[in-house]
Figure 1 (cartoon, one colour):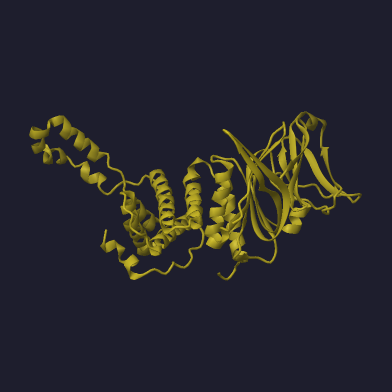
Figure 2: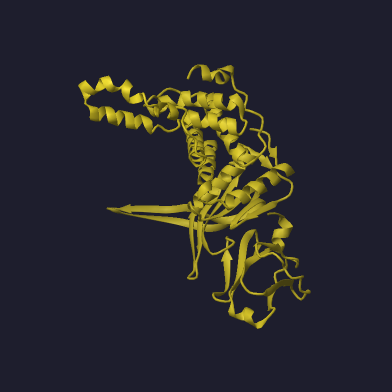
Length: 418
C-alpha cells in the first residue's frame, strides 16, 4: 500500500477483529467518520489533530465476548506512534513501530536520490518512508576512564531531528532477524531505485514492544554524482515488490538472501568484497530455485548408463571392488553445477547469452580468490557479478529489466575461457 505523507498523518487503522464491530474515527469535536471497511488497513478520514478519537460499536452483544484488536498508526512529531485498543490487553501506545513484537528501524541518507513529495509504503508490519524530516536517538562519547582491569565509558544520548532526504525502514522479525529484514528491504530499494538508495546510515536501532514494556537498543553511524529522481513507475514497482517481500514464506527465503547480499555488495568498499557479495547472492538464489524446480545436471543421465561400472572394472584389481563401487555411487549422485543453474535460469527467464557471459566472467575472477589468490580484482568483474544478480532478482520479482551495465568485449567472450 502506498500512502502520501498527508494520508499517513491522518493515520492507518487496522487490526484483527473476530467480532462484528464497527470502527470510526474523529478529530476534536468533529463528526465521526464513515465506518472503516478494511481490517488490513484503512486510511482515517478525520483530520490529523492532537485530540484524536476512535470508537467501536458492536453490532450485537456477542461482540463483547470475542476478541478485537485495533491499531491506529500515525506520524506525530516526525515519529511513528501506534495506539492499540485490545479487549484483552487494554489500551497501549507503541512508539516507533506499527505493532507488538521485535523490530529494527533503519534510516539512511541517500544523498544522490531526490523526490518531490514524501511517500509511505506499508505491507504487513513493514513501514518504509521516503521522508524529508526524521528524528531519532543519537549517542556520542563524553569520557572514559581505565583503572586496573576496569574501564568506564560515559555516553550522552539525546534525541535529534534531521532535515533532508531520508529513507526510513521499520521491519519486523520474521524468518530472519528484524535487522536482516530491514537490510533485505534496503536491498530491494537498491535494486529498484539503483545503488544510490544505499546511503549513509544515520539511525539503526532495535525496538521491542511487549506487554511488560519497551526496549530500545541504539546504534548510530555517521559517515559526485547527479541525483536520480524517484519516478512514479519506481514507486509502483517498489510497492508491488514490497508486498511480495513482506509476505514471503519459507519458499521465498532465497529471494530475501539474494536481496541482502545485493545490498551488501552495493555498500561494500572494495571490488573483492563487491564481487564476492554479488556472487554469493546469485549462488544462493539460483541454488535454492534450482532445487525447488527440480533441475537435473546434464550429466545425471550419462552416469546412470549401465555401462559405467564396466568402464571402471579394470580399477578393481589395484584399488579393490569396494572403492570402485563407492566411486560409481558418488558419480551417480551428481547434482547440477552453478553453471548449469545459470544456464537453466537464463533459458527460463529469457535473459540471453549476456547473462551467462557476465556470470562466467565474474566466476573467472572469483574462483582464484577461493583458492587463496591475492590477485587484484578489476571493477569490471564486480560489475559483471552485480549485473547478473540484479537481472536474476528482477526476473524473480517481475520487475522491468534495466539497461545492461556496459562492459568490455572480454566479458561477452568470457564463455570462450571457461
